[in-house]
Length: 279
DNA sequence: AGCCCTGTTATATT
DNA sequence: GAATATAACAGGGC
Image (tube, rainbow, N blue to C red; front, side, top):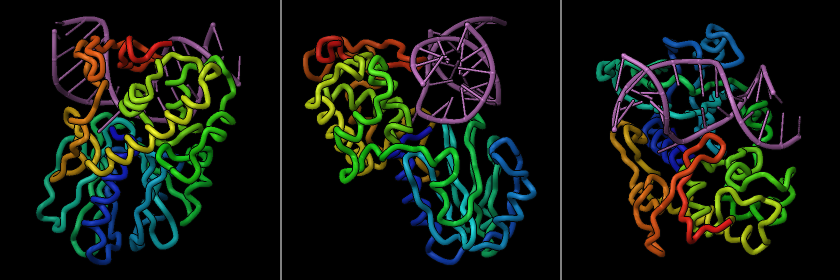
């Protein structure tokens, strides 16, 4: 159930474990086919089996597993998780293990997803960004080089759209989800329901600066571990201790001691300080 | 027990 | 188009 910092942490953890040696796919077991999108499961298996894993990348909340000729584009949605075992013998099957990659050296990569929302798609190598679901993604929410006020303002189609909805739209900005968007708006002192058309250039700049700062700090802390979610079997993030508003309903604002409010914006639970973040 | 909630997003409906 | 509802699904909390 990760946002950009958690997916980045997953990617780094997987690279560290998997690229200690060559990993060639021997077989893929698909126990729940709904994860595989836009391609039959036999074709999916056939496409990837016998290929060596060459790289793992990330854009926004998407993971790219690159093989010699093709890539798997993986989205974890709410609860997708990977875990890796060097030896098949160590592999313990659990309830929501849906996709299992067996490598020729007896190591195993398992995709687990309690709610089965996650997706996997296949593209040709280096054509990941051309796939429909990824093609329209906006600039990444921590991209110092490309993210600027002019870019964001150019993405406004309806000035009456609420800022939270705007920032959650991955086609405007890629990587922010429900937790970090609340954090960014709190740090920027912007009410989550403020209309994008009423936001000043200075405020846009603050939103950008805070987005970069918060996401990069979260990455340094290896993301947030909330409830049952952890990055992998032997790693937990620490950023949940740094969250200033998310999950702090009725607690005191760290700036002004006002009680943090929780409302609905769209259908998402939304935390904010009614004094620091005025409409 | 039943209803609400949950770090997501694509699609259908109004 | 744009806002809202729904769908995909499981489990935890009250």
